Length: 258
Ligand SMILES: Nc1ncnc2c1ncn2[C@@H]1O[C@H](COP(=O)(O)OP(=O)(O)OP(=O)(O)O)[C@@H](O)[C@H]1O
Image (spheres, rainbow, N blue to C red):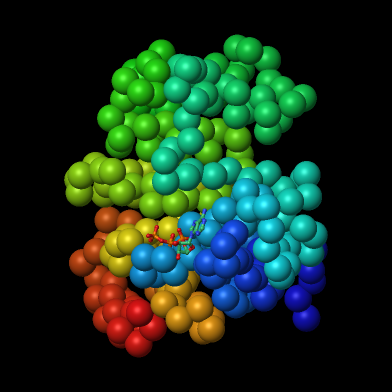
């Protein structure tokens, strides 16, 4: 029997209607064990961003339950890191200060200034942008801002990590490099991760399970297990038979559900 104390992220009968009656999510049930990466794909408007916003506590209202290990995801011991589509960086603060503030808010007991600086440098280096520490967000390209936002989310050592198309502004080669860096960083702190992407290949390269949102909001999301690809070395995934098979299987579900 599962124990609610380590049952991971549990989404029960989640329904979200925006003001004005716009139904964004009709009926979402998901049980996602902790310390996993779950990629989410779905047609435009199927509610992917809304699902992340609900978990991040950014919606004024919803019905249903959002639990992490048996308690509300919004309980204070559950630290949530979010990389929103618009990056969410403070334009009047440097890259370093953006990360520093997030660390201070999430861990008010705090690190010593020097230790904090070491950590910030570590996360910026891990995303390949150490040289941007003193720059302001609006002087950066979209792809650089995305990397800062990801570094910031990792830096707070979240329990739950939510990423909304984090690599969408990157060229194909940078994207591949960052997918690998992302997996390395995640392994160092395996937060329970929901990763929205429009790219089916990316969903298969990164997810332990792939969640496919339906276009019909009366239907439930479909979950495809992706362990066979997830457990491979990253550099072997793309050329493997397993990857090819998963692509076929997921495209089939997409044809049925979209
Ligand atoms: N703030 C809002 N007010 C009213 N309706 C909204 C709001 N945000 C989203 N919606 C609506 O809710 C539905 C789901 O939107 P959401 O952004 O979650 O979808 P999505 O799957 O992330 O889409 P995309 O792939 O295009 O980013 C859409 O019909 C959208 O128009």
